Length: 402
Image (cartoon, rainbow, N blue to C red):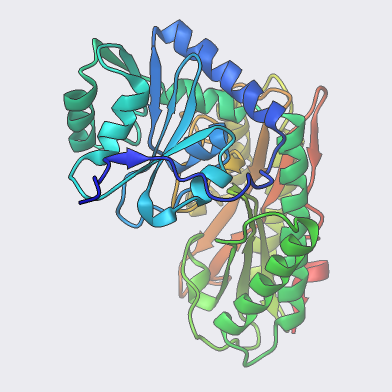
């Protein structure tokens, strides 16, 4: 009978073209190893989609299975399930080990094979479950464990020129989706019909720009009427009516890198009460963008915009913070919570950071101007200010459509 291994290497085919050159990944690993040394970690065991993709290039699809990346002084090895065969190796900058499901806990046996036993293990405290941590301790028998999540987040917050180039391309793809949505808006059209037009346009544009990339996870939220009251409301089959407030949201994903375009629109016409709220939110948007520059903290920007809204008796309609970081993040995995425009975030903006400005006001149903108003641009912090890389126009002059 053929012996069934706990794990093995499935190096099938040739390495794929990754989102970045090998030198980019090596620079990230060098930075990680410096952080590991500061923390005294002999091995880092990552389990999140964002850190595995950031350091190796491989973006996994879990489907209930564990995945990992083990980094030591010499190794960078992704650990993947057998269902993926050779794809994780092809899309990893380093080595890959495939664990089998012929025996329970083979994932952790593969991790221990690379990380070793009795060392100081770095992990992600914001991702690893208590159960998974207990099992890791059982198999690695670490001297101690240290949380590397804050250090890796700070590393990811500072974008390289290559990352900024990819994010810039993503912003342009988001703009293309926005224009396709604008063209599709018609009285009587369903939200889902308009959303599909934007998504299809973005996927075609990504394929044109990045013929070697993997294509998945781009999406659109296009909302109307009451469905605009939240930023993350799902698309429905509601038909657009004349005078409806609309919310355009395009989200292209390029090899795990997320970008976004968000705009307030109106179908056919906008009433005076709605126009006044919309123009106030646009003014806050422009003011907020003017405050994004190096040396200013996220909290300072937030308090300034709060004061802007308070002076207009609108602050109580604010629904969430005013912006967040961009990079390897998504609605279903990870975010760089240390770079958000909120009162409780003291991070100081630095050149190389990428952040959105996206004020939103929600006026309750039944009041004049009811609905959710949101504008969203992506800005790269530079040495002396910020560069807006979003091109799609905002405001009533362009976005009363259909």
